[in-house]
Length: 116
Image (cartoon, rainbow, N blue to C red):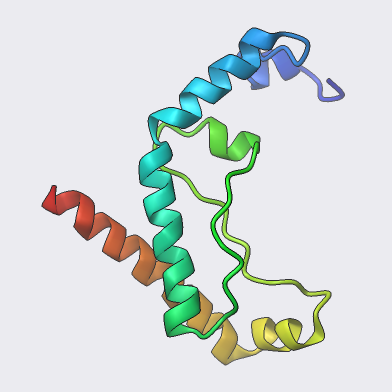
């Protein structure tokens, strides 16, 4: 509501309207199963290939996950408030491992979709 032209920017979204939330809910369910598959791939890569602690895959009510007309995930790499995770994520090796894990996840997901 605080943004200029929020109705135009968000295609008529009205935060006071239950219909707006129902629309987002329906839109997110169209690609939900594929999004979960992709998220599971990312989580598996982080856990098994990079050795990161698994915090599981969760669904969140984020606008960036509701609106895409394709599977979507929001990747949380770690917490900078944790000094050990911060050191890992700031290191060149950590950046390469995490980027490689995300790449492999997307590659594997794409290959599985193309097989079907």
